Amino acid sequence: MLIVATLIIASVTGVVFLVNEATQRPQDAYAMQAAGELVIAHLKLHTNQRPRNWHGLSETFAALQRAHVSVGSPLEQIQQRIEFDWNADVSELKRSAFTNGVRPFRVVKLRNGRNTHWVGVEPNAMIWQYLQSTSPMDFVTNSIVE
Image 1 (spheres, rainbow, N blue to C red):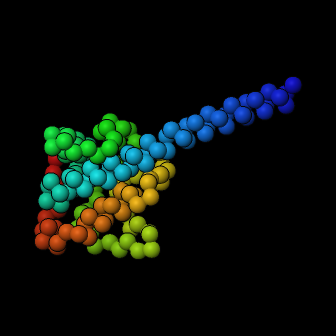
Image 2 (spheres, helix red, strand yellow):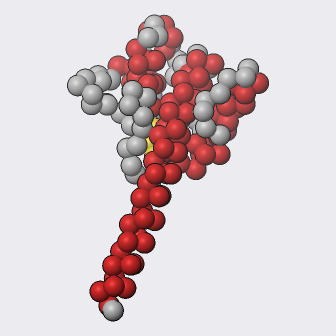
Image 3 (cartoon, rainbow, N blue to C red):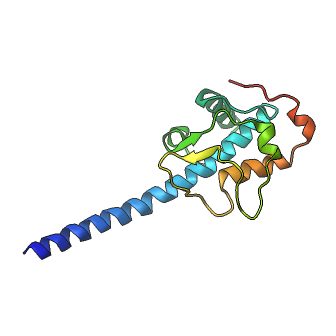
């Protein structure tokens, strides 16, 4: 009887884990993509000045909504799932080397510690690629925008 109970508990635990994985991992990936897109939009709207906090990104999110541009995930979901390095120096990020798929920085990451993202849309790589496409004169100042 103990063996049967143990097998049932293990099976239920496994099913719960698989259902959680099937629902949470895609949401994590969407939030990571949206976070990368949101940071890039903020950099574009604020002459490559980094966001200082959630307030700065929420203003960018609102500006995108007013322009009918979607980043794919609601801001609340991004805030729940994503953690930012608010102290990152944009000009330093631009100078960093991103080689052989190894990212030189992690300014966007999941709060749960995972590295879940869609293929080709890892937010730190997206930000790095955007920064590489801008001219050096875009980085005269790295002041903070709120």
